[in-house]
Length: 306
Image (cartoon, rainbow, N blue to C red; front, side, top):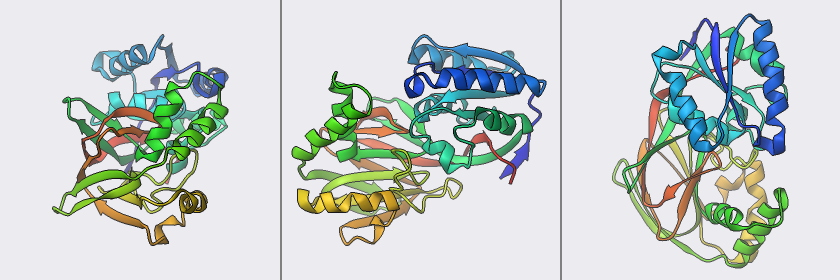
């Protein structure tokens, strides 16, 4: 569903550290363009993730008087914004300035062009889309917009977060090499909304509201963020040599025809595997088990006109 809003005042929240510091100049350029459109911009930057989340929640309050929350950064910064605006009437605007930008890619938002992204916000066209909601065993709830990852990919993220050297992309590459050397079958149990139970060893389980993660890797290539459903991609446990040949197919989105890949579509599921954590939109969520469901129309996104 689409609509149109008048955007006169926004709270713009940035993460100066996103994309190795590239978010800060992107924020300055977007602010200048929004003000050129006559929009009042309340620019803010949290001192930490918790402080940024506090600022995002404050923007949603009626007393803030803003017409949209605008986030500048990558998928992680968008994910932070989702925690505040999900299920509310306040639209989210995005100035993509990250490395992966999978949420921006999924919704056709301008990437690497802060002025064009600001123009989209100023135009006020909204698109109502689904979000994934995650309920953890400890009672906490988180929202996600793109893909929830668990298994080999979440183990790589765990390892990356533990490493202190090297920096940047090389740290992630080193984490992949270490986890690949330690690759083992991971016992998973899933229960889908219709009662289907899946119990078997997997390499990974991905739950997609949109199609890609990791900067365009189309792990759930047919996911549609407006159908009220989540797409599941399950990759069976395989020997390392076969996995090494398999992974390049993920980049093309052709892996779903592989005999050791199964896909499902469901409005909700329960996901469990001992010692495995989950990440979504590139951010740590919680250890499994998790209950995951699609919430139709949970987000009003400022997007290009249809």
